[in-house]
Length: 166
Image (tube, rainbow, N blue to C red; front, side, top):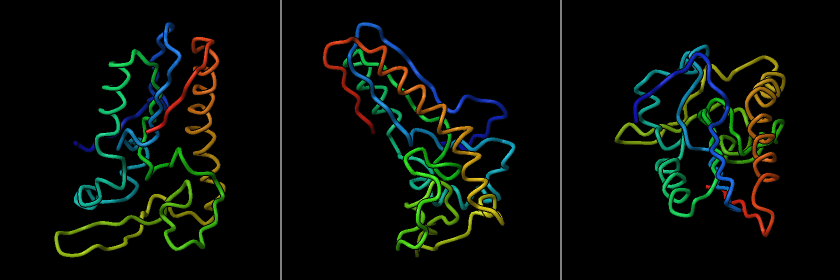
């Protein structure tokens, strides 16, 4: 996947199929980082060494393939979990062992240079008031995603709506 950055983009991409009662969601479909955040201060080689950490490889393709096969609606996050993790709550406890999988605003990234794994700092996610920035991104990116998900679920065909996340 190529590293991409975007000036203006919705926090999500959604398709609605009115005759379906199925919604597929994918919170880690993208590795995009908003251009204004300058790759979060990470070098391109660092991002490429950690590709599996900034989005889930194949998740977007799987979501689209299944949606096509089942005629389902979709909702996919448009930004990397390194920027804001759509699956995590703001203000999560950072004291757990695997901290880069516990909070919405990750401060570290695991990279593999071909020899060993290293944990490096994500400079663009370090703030004196981390919680404030985390909540700001949450409100600007995750909250609209969640609202769209709720709206799509309400619009699904009435008999036994089903939502599956990848």
